[in-house]
Image (cartoon, rainbow, N blue to C red; front, side, top):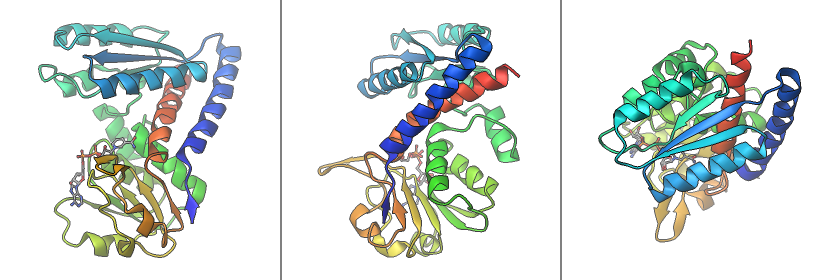
Length: 281
Ligand code: NAD
């Protein structure tokens, strides 16, 4: 079984991006810039943002974090986003979620210029992705896609089952697999027989949030299994896939932690570089 090493894949992607950023600097005499807006002092958000900033600096991006207290008015945040939309030194804008209740998440997402939407959440990017046009793609499914492609470069005709239909993971993952000519089944909490659906799959991507939902006897021999889930349990962090059981049947599997997680941040950097390149065309 191939244990898909997300840390190694992310390090390789960062190395590629570092070289690309250096080349862009030579060509354009400027580097891509990522600005993150962080509202409030929730510990996980603070940690995510710190890691994003560290990784951005590592590959040579210009990075900036704008912090607001959780009492900040929605208007102040929207005005700042408008200002960043018009700032030529900013290639990508990310507003760290979740937001305080008094701030309308959808309004925030839709205020970010689609060309700077490095999270790929703007309806314009969602639409472009589903139409098969160039777009920013949400970072977690993009990371899953890149890891699948490393294991199996030609996905045409493969059967893929995506477990979970969130806007963040399941839906964009489905679009990426469709673009590769997979036959994709998207499953969710109302799916009648999830085990039977999974047993059909050459590729399973589980993004549910239920510890070890996908069992060993749900997986076809030699399937590729990508585990997006991050679940805190008494036994520590586990994914949505029963790792020990599934590792006995799968051809390749991502661990939790150390699988999808590290690739997510590396893909944020990739999206920032892509936004910059599109802005220079
Ligand atoms: P979500 O709660 O928005 O969506 C969960 C989806 O799972 C829903 O579509 C729901 O229909 C489906 N679902 C629920 N119960 C089900 C069941 N019994 N059978 C089949 N489907 C079922 O979750 P999300 O934001 O997509 O996150 C999913 C998981 O991925 C979480 O554990 C989250 O922490 C993790 N996550 C990881 C990363 C990463 O970088 N590794 C990033 C984002 C989210």
